[in-house]
Structure formats: structure tokens, C-alpha cells
Length: 329
Ligand code: LMR
Image (cartoon, rainbow, N blue to C red; front, side, top):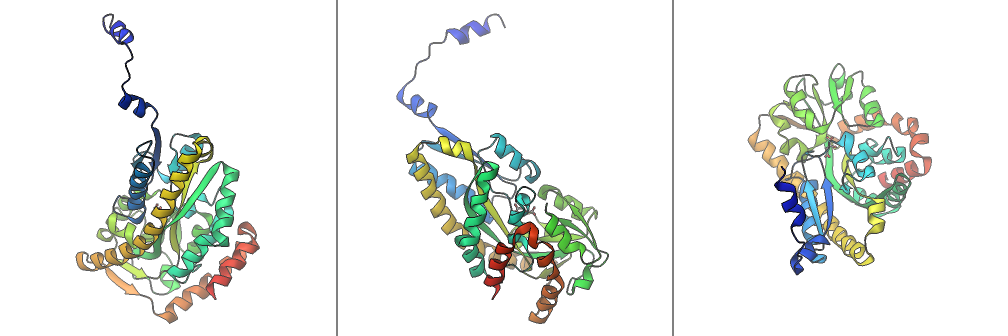
């Protein structure tokens, strides 16, 4: 020990050009909870690549997938405290902090991919992104994943009454919890990276997720039934720590903004294609029994869930509810 420290301290600090460049490099840690081969995983990588190119290596985006740094329970606080600079949580995870975000999780809020894009790109999206400032976050974009489907190991789900007595894992949202509890069933909120294990050991019977998450986390191995219901939408708010953003040089902000715009355009198209492809993979590779709701059955679910809109109108805000209703026409 005695011999070690002086050597280090006496080492002259010689900086060649390359080292100086590295010293100035801005590092953005980007944490998320899903696999790399998913719409969000690939979008994060694409963004990192575009930022590298546009800033000529001045900014490095380090992507941490699979919740290796933080689960969705901790990542919002981690962002606010500056332990990471970027996250892309799914909408439910913002709903405690900003209840208006529950608008995007309403049952059958969006009846098509076009409606989702219209919401992201229009007034609904702008209103929600603007509200993030109040909780020290910079809303950069919306990334889509896809429509949610229901899976279960207990029994096929065709009518709302089929949920009776089942126990579902829900994402972290009072609204989503309430949506399922309407049907005489149990729900347990649970972080994403614990879902497979709890499906496997039967702690919960099933849940809802996008095809891409069901496929990449191999839920199809531990869930026997899947209903293609498209009853809700799974999407992400791409967020940056606000004070970190404000301290970035103007030109870097501009380059990052461009990278985000290009990534988002590509990512939202890619998400649709990935979910289609991965549904085919599930059909081919798994033993799952897959059932697609008929239009009449879908209408039955819509009627059953309709009271949720009135129940959550004051929490979400009547204007956002009105705009969602308008999109459904
Ligand atoms: C989930 O918790 O199931 C999803 O929100 C995970 C994700 O980020 O797609």
C-alpha cells in the first residue's frame, strides 16, 4: 500500500488529443426493463447509434436493457435523482405521478395503430409531454410497442365472465388494476422481470402484455392460453432528466433532438412489424392455444369496460377523455 499510492499520485497527467476528446465526452445512461430484441430495446440502440453519428462521438448513449440497473419500480426515481439520464417507462408507470397519463391506458382507448399515432403526434401527446416538466423530466417522444393481449394458464378468456376467479399480474397502475378487478378476479402488481417466474410457479394465473414482451420473455412457455383482444395499448414515454437536458450545449440538444425524431419515426413502424412477426413465431414455436375475439366479443368487452371512463374522468381530466372519445369515432 505504501508503495502504491505515491506512484499513482506522481504520474504526470499527459493528455493527448484523443484523451482530451474522451474527457469531454458526455455520457447518457439509458435504462430500460425489456429485452434487446423488442421495439423499445431496438429503438434505444438505434437512438444510441444516431446520437453517436450526429454528435461525432461527443455524446455516448449507454443502453442498459432487461432492468439490469433498475426495475420499473425504481427507474423513475433513478431518473429524477440523476443516477441515469434516460428511461422509457411504459405509460402505467407514470400514472401515480401524473394521473392524466392514465388516459393512454383506458380500455380500447385506441382502435387502430393510426389512432395511436394520431394521439402521440397530436394534442393528447403534447398535453401529456408538457406535464412532465412539473416532475423534472423532459418528455422526448412516445415510442409504441403494440396492443396488449391477455394470457392465462387457467383457462381460455373469451368473455369477461371467463376472468372470474382468475388471478392476474398487473402493471403498476390503479386504473389497470381497477379494469381487471371489475370482473371478480384477483390482481397483483408486479415488476416485469418477476413475471415469468410467477407464471411458472403459478402465483398468478395470467396477465396482459404485448406480443413482443410475451415472445421475448418466453411467457408462451408458461401460459397456455392467449386471447388476441387488442384491448389496450402498451407504449412508452421516452424521458430525460430535465436539468441534465437543460445543461447540454445548444448544438448537442439539437443533434439529440434530431436523433430522437428519426429514431421515433423508424421505431413506431418497426414496432408494428415486430409484433406481427413475433405472433407468427409464437404460433409456430409454442403450444399456446391462441384465440382471436370476434367483433361481437370485442363489443362485449367494450361495453363491460365502459364504466371505467366515467370512474376515472376526474382523475384523468374531462378534456383528455373527450379527445380519446373523439379518436374512437
Ligand atoms: C410490463 O411491465 O409488462 C411492461 O410495461 C414492460 C415494458 O416496459 O414493456
